[in-house]
Image (cartoon, rainbow, N blue to C red; front, side, top):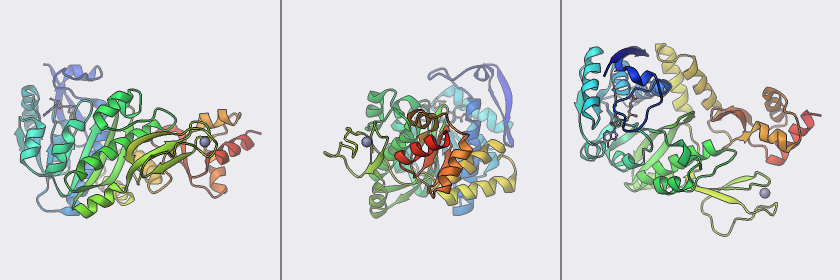
Length: 378
Ligand SMILES: C[S@@+](CC[C@H](N)C(=O)[O-])C[C@H]1O[C@@H](n2cnc3c(N)ncnc32)[C@H](O)[C@@H]1O
Ligand SMILES: [Zn+2]
């Protein structure tokens, strides 16, 4: 294995040369994915925030460490007690080498991640496997301490977005929805699954930041303990009822015989999924401040993403495809900025969304935004 040096944030490490050439495939051995840099930048900020907020001896587990890129960066740039684990011998050797390369000492284990998490508790747990994180979430839920932070990557975007509904059912015991707002529905499906998993152990999920990027979902959640908190968290798990004809959406606690829309069309449902807020505004403000105070690792892309998700926080759920709206209105679309201004001028919330650059988040009903679109193109 030929190694080359790469730098991210304030850390440099060695990675297999071939991993800079292509997209990783499961079972290919230890791999570094440059496309995950932003994900790691945000992780460093989230861990710094956890350390700042809760203090004391903070422990962070990189449960599926690979090259160690993430765990080594967290150790160097955020400073908690880090444990780096991977079941692969090759990975563990490279992790050790990368710790030495960064001048750090940390605990390295070569265990099955589920076995390790079943035996020990951690304040922050990072699950970043190839594909679905579902097989790791039970043991992560048991392992995470009070006020703990769970960081979860899912690269199986197709099942979560409804491209492979049977895989969505198997992995997440939930029904996805392939359509206009499938990326946010996918993120909510994953969040709902994490909340339901935590609930089995009397734990509660509070979403801090929920992201979709081209190849993956990434969640940051606070895990709380207690049956009461857990019940309250489950109040945010329900279903989405979507009308494919008039595009109206509604969250519901349960679905029974409620499939008919006001327009007469049968509604389709997705879920169970998370129906509450997907970001925590205070968390996003803290990350931006911490990134700004320390400069690295908060380059433009991270800051832009934090600004965009900050605008989504507390706002209307789901989003609307801009071009679909235009074609349904029989209109040629105006500049998006003008469309947002017009909706805002009429008293509605209207923002862009990180889920899709060609989409709008608004509390205006479909009839209104299609009408506004038609008027603007006249
Ligand atoms: C996507 S890579 C990790 C990437 C790394 N977090 C980073 O940011 O560069 C996934 C790793 O998970 C490890 N892995 C998969 N299943 C595992 C298990 N059950 N226990 C421990 N490690 C596992 C694989 O060996 C692989 O190195
Ligand atoms: Zn309808």
